[in-house]
Length: 118
Image 1: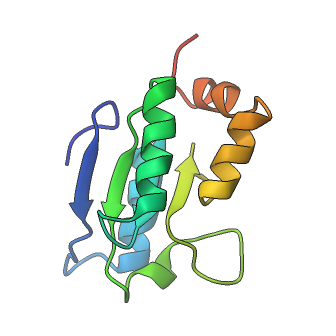
Image 2: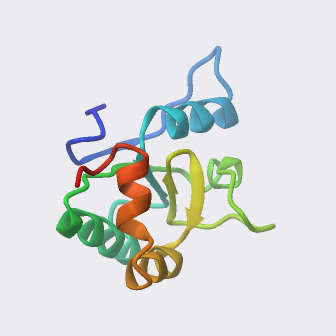
């Protein structure tokens, strides 16, 4: 897997010693900006990536199988994909990311977690 400064996309492979939940939580903690998606062809994921790219951030994108989606810790009672995390916090899906951008809160949040420099 590439570092968070370069675009990456991969599947979440299962490790014998690591549960899906543990692996997802580890990935969230290792990458300042990470997006979990159902497939690499998800149009909402592409919009999220493009928005972040235009700002200068290259998120890590992890493709999950349907049985892995429920392990993503989201802010709602149901699983959400694509789901974006900034600094280990789930900010939600595409609507939430765009809302952060439109209100001017996205860039400061990205700077705060070290994913973007002023």
